[in-house]
Image 1 (cartoon, one colour):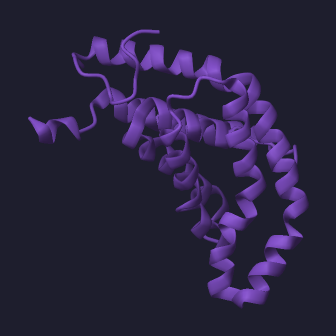
Image 2 (tube, one colour; image 1 turned 90 degrees about the horizontal axis):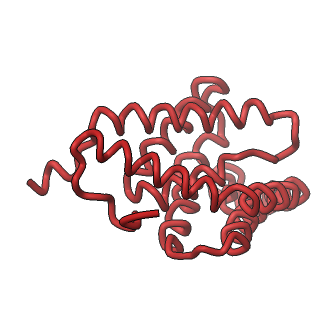
Length: 186
């Protein structure tokens, strides 16, 4: 019985694939805006609504990035950086304040370059990693502002919507047990 709890239903496989693809498509559509994208918002939503299963839509998104842009050095960052945000969001999943979610998302955007710097530490040394990070601070500030505004306006309503839709999907497919952290009703 316990083993079944860790298996994905066909509906979840479909849902996570679609959500990962939608996250990627939304980022591509917004590519004209410098460092303004919905990925951070979606990763936080995945973490608070799906718990450990958030890794599936996150890595669908990462895989699509790889397919479109190929393997480059930044790709290594994407293998772990989104999990840092997902873990932080999961730990704060009880928070209901839109401002709190906006602050988390903004802080992640501001720290994005720093979180990615370890890869450059191994490839370019300490000096190279510091130079790479400092050169990107202006983009991190834009990332912070974009993440803050997007999360402030969209996190709470999208969380309610995603929780409701996920609950309905689980109910239609015989899911009698909700994932940990998902409230019994909205």
